[in-house]
Length: 232
Image (cartoon, rainbow, N blue to C red; front, side, top):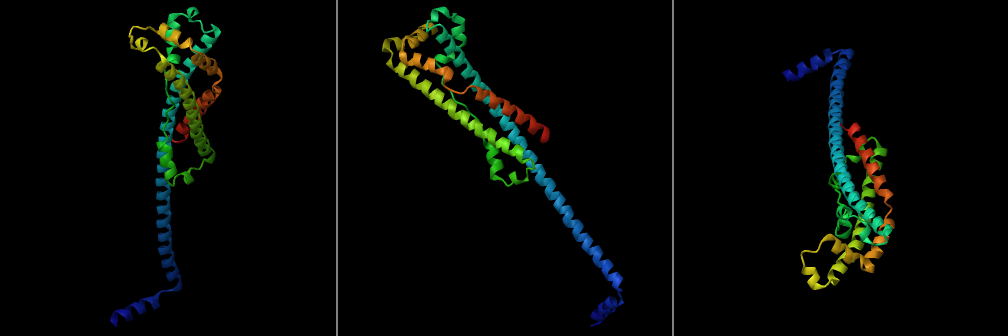
């Protein structure tokens, strides 16, 4: 009872101004605590966004290298096919070193490989909603979409090429196929003696919208530079 009476006496002794002053101090402390907590949370969130976007940047850099590599291979096919068409499939007018330089038309099968790991992580997280630049985010998603389209285009091209080359290889005379001293000229001569390969060569220049590869390369370069500047 003594303690209770003491508390009551203390409370009765407070003035109204003292009460509100004490209350304000406590309330202010709570507000500051929550405000500081929000600041820490926002800082941590933006740090996570920055880290995620840096991974996106690295992934786009890798994808651009892959695009440039496959574009280089396709340019070889386009150049060699144009030479063959220009010379009406007569390789005697084409220097041997040129045939060797652009020989991938006659044997190379490939595909466009690109990564989406960083994008998948970003999509799977809750960070996308905290990216303030929605236009940039939309452009990034569009870039990955275009990579998917080019992958399909490249796949279609090499599928057609593989069908022709493998079909002709399987039709070759067994004795000829087992010989190991056949040079490139012999191989090219064999291929261009077949209508299937000639038709494919004629089709190469118009098979794809080749400018779209350059446009995507420019898009990737712009995206990468923007991301590097924004998320250092």
